[in-house]
Length: 271
Image 1 (cartoon, one colour):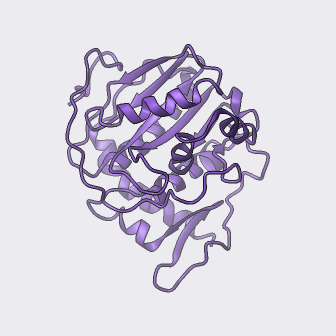
Image 2: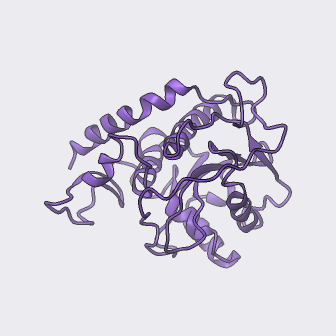
């Protein structure tokens, strides 16, 4: 495993072990469309930052929509993944990153949140496409902190098995990678970083694989990404830096599924 919980330094000092990844728990719905109309989430979007509940996608009796933020809807089948020992799909991570943007950090102009759908697209875009995508966000090219949820899929159309978190930090002049499963997503994170660093004008930024709490099973990687996003955004809000953030505690991971269920229920009251 990558780290002890009380390690004095957050950064890994030795190579992470490569562990076998679990089989995909559920197909991701990332295949949507990789175009500039499907933009990343920005905490300084020019559109309204209020909770928006679209009429599309349409609810069905078999699998009704329980909550929605902008274009990110959670159906009953998605929320059921939170009730048991299940791998989280992209719909849940898309929804939570939209929540960070539109609710929790709607007044923060320093953060950009990139959903799994968009990080997957960014792996395959050329510089022109990436520039157009990021320019669509208000000052996105100059955001000090960019949080990207990353999956290990190597296809636009097929889902992978593992989630991790990449953070681009201009103040730290670094790309940070947080991986709860022995560095299994390191190669994918490097592919993403190499594809976006020129457009972000961060060619000389360091790659830093970070010491973090390791998951104790084969399905909690998505929960780890969500909890780490929470911890990082809170830490950065106070210190204007990613450097120095400490690993999560296991109690945070254990409590998060119930917290997410309550969050969905609260936001679902507006539908």
